[in-house]
Each structure stands twice: as C-alpha cells, then as structure tokens.
Image (cartoon, rainbow, N blue to C red; front, side):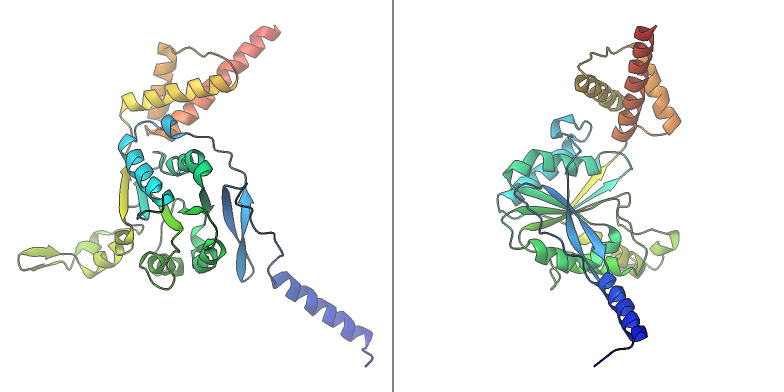
Length: 299
C-alpha cells in the first residue's frame, strides 16, 4: 500500500510524540560501585539514576545530636545485620542535622552494604516500582525522603501511609524508610484541629481531625526529635567546621576571641543556633580569612 506524503509525515509526528512518552532506556544501577541513587520521574514511570556521593560528613563530626545519633545508628546497624529495625521519622527545627545524620550513615556503613535512594515527595506514588527495582538486590537500602511535609488529601501522603502500614505497597525486607521533616506529624496543625476531643472512661480522646493527622507519623517506629543548639554546642560546631576547612587546605586557622564573637553575632543575625548556621559561618570566615592572606602575600 502506497501512503501519501502527507500521511507519512503525520505518522512520523505521531511516532515522535509517542516516543517522548515512553520510558527512556537506562542501564541498571551497579550497586557494587554506586552507593546512592535518585528516583527520576519520566513520563508515566521513572528510573533510578546513580549519583556520586559528595557529602563527606562523618558521624563523629556531628555535634549536639549524640542521643539522636545513637538511636539511629543502632537502628541502622540492626537493619544491616538483617535484624528487626524500624522506619524512622527525624523531625524538628531546620538545620539541626537531620539530613546530615542520614548521609553520615551512608558514609559510615556503605562498605557494609548500606545504600541510599532519595525520593521527592511528588514521586512517592512510585514507591511500589522503586521497591520492585531493589527487592532482589543483595544490599540494604535506606529510602530517604528529605524535608517532607504534606497537605491534607495528597495522593503521595496516602501512598506513604500504605507503604508504612504493611499493605500490598509495603517495603521489601531490604528497604527501610527514613523521613526528615520540620513537622512532627508531617501535616500542618491548626487550633481547630483540637476541637471535638472527648472523655472516654476518664481519658481524653483526640478529635477525629487530630487522629487523622497523627495517623501517618504513628506508623514510623522511631520518632527522633532535633532541637536548636545551646550556644556552647553551636561554638563547638563552629570550631569543628573551621578546623575541617583548614585541614582540607593544609592550613591551621587558630581560634580567637574575635572569631568566637563573630560566630555568635552570625547566629544572632540568622536567629538560629544549629549545625547549618555553624557550617555557613565557618565557610564565610575561612574563605574571607584566606582571601585576605592571599591579597597580603601578593602585595
């Protein structure tokens, strides 16, 4: 059958459009050499994209979170050993080390078979596909959803709830879910949510609104809270960061009263004492100090 030129052109346009919708051909992640991957959405599905781990934070470098560190390290070691372990919700004030702790675990235990997959909130609807991609791998996977918050009724909320609830969407034996959030219950809370509570046999029962809002966080076996630092802890973190930046450049940067007062003023300007603030100040101080030294040497 001979097709007219205009029909051929139309078919080519249709095929081109369909081709853009099809999943792109990608190689399977080589987990023997790759320790981390991101889930990348494409069309109606997605794929695991290997990423190079560039965060070199070690567990011993995380200050002010000793209790939180101990809890999560023990849980992760149980998981790596094939023993019972819990999904974990790391919640609390921003910049206090929640994400850094999970990344430090990967740096510490990657040699023992720990791997990480980071998933954005919008891609939680693909949990079953992610689980299927790794359930037969001989590694232990932390599925990390960082800085997670929901609004009521979101589909990804329901998918995560199902995965944590042991339904047909539940994670395979070699996957744990670690979530970080600024919200304890992952959802916004309003004053009216607490209305409607009632006493049953002398005990106050939560309102239906609050019951629904805590129903997701309740499914995490571990709740690990992170809080702002004391000034002493904050200055310890600054000292550690300054020393680290100096070591990377084989330069000794002495601690001084001026450095300490500037660090405190920086935290006041930021209205926050936490690991992130300490890191940002140290980067600014060390960079500025070294630039001044270079300029003086050039004169």
